[in-house]
Each structure stands twice: as C-alpha cells, then as structure tokens.
Length: 251
Image (tube, rainbow, N blue to C red):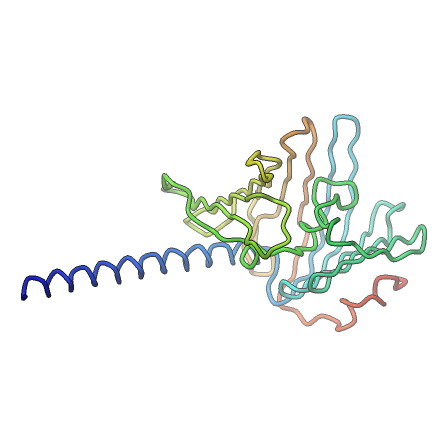
C-alpha cells in the first residue's frame, strides 16, 4: 500500500510537471509571437517609409507615411511618386478601404482581396494593414531540432481564421528577440515567399529592423523592400486619422 502511494505520488508529480512544462512552452511561444506581431507598433506609431519594387524588367520606388493604433487601426498616405500622390489606405479592425485621387473614388477591399498585391508590390494588403494576427489567428509550435541561436516556430492557422496561408514559419534571434525571417507556405506545404528583417536600428528609443524585404519564391528576379526612414511611438494621434473622412482629405 505504501509503495502504491509512492508510485501514485510520483506519477501525479510527473503529470503535473509535464503539464507545467507544456504550459510554459506554450506561453513562451505566445510571448515570442506577440513580439513579432507588434514589431512595428506600440500603443501608437507614426512611420515614414520608402518602398522599392524590383522586377526583371523595371524598378520603381514610392514613399509613404503610416499611422497605427495598436493592432486595430492603420492609415497610410502615399507622398511620392507624383502619379500616386494622395493615394490612401485605411483599416479599422477587419475592414479596409483605399482612396485613389486620380479617379476620386473610395474602394472597399473585400476579405478575398486581403492577400492581393498592395500598390503593385510583393507586399499584400494584409502585410501592410495587418488585418490578420499571428498571435490571434495561428497556433504555434517549436520546430525541432532546436537551434541554439534562434527560436524557430511553425504557425498553423486556427480553424476559425479566414487565412490563405497553409502555414508560416518564424525565425527569431534568442539574444535580443529580434525577428529575422518569416516563410509563407500554401495549403500543400509549398513555400511561396520569404520575408526577411534586416539592418537593426533604434527609432524613438525602440530597437527594430529598418529594412523588410519580401521575395516570392516562384518568381525569379522579383523582390520588394521597405526601408523605415523615421519612426515615432506612443505619441498622441489625432482622433480623426482613422476615419473614412480622412481618406479623401486634401493635404
């Protein structure tokens, strides 16, 4: 009887320890993904960026300014080139609109177009406006064998999430929790594109990569790069920024 009690106690201890370890690992993944999700945001952010689109036949650049509030709201205003000046993008929660001044028209982006190209680049509407959330819409697990220098995580979309990607893998440097790379796969498990984070700099006291580069795997010679020129965080923003009225505002 005494031996049986000891065995039961040991078994219970191992089960509890295993549960606690699993819970700790799950929490660790959530913490890591939360950092990646909020890489370019704080409570609020205001950033000036330059985008360069490269194809085998042509290359073009544009500059734009982006405002965000947590993970829920984004507003983008294109400053150059002249033909795109005044083009704006607004997202509030899971709704998104574009305004094109050349035709003086506001167009709502349907959910089916969130994975469509933003301004002809390799970035999607979802990439720029962050309609989906790695933390909320995906379930994560560590990729084995373990990498001594980096966290490698596989993200599978939750059944309730309206997500196009079959999975996403994320590489985060352990020393400073800086994201290095994301790879995106289709539903058949084929890699479709790679997003790399480069050239870490300090903006308004926040350390973050200043360059984001996307390369589609199935299109040779194509890539899009966004370079952050300036960024401010946790500043008070005008309450009218994230409104439909602001889309067509003359500046």
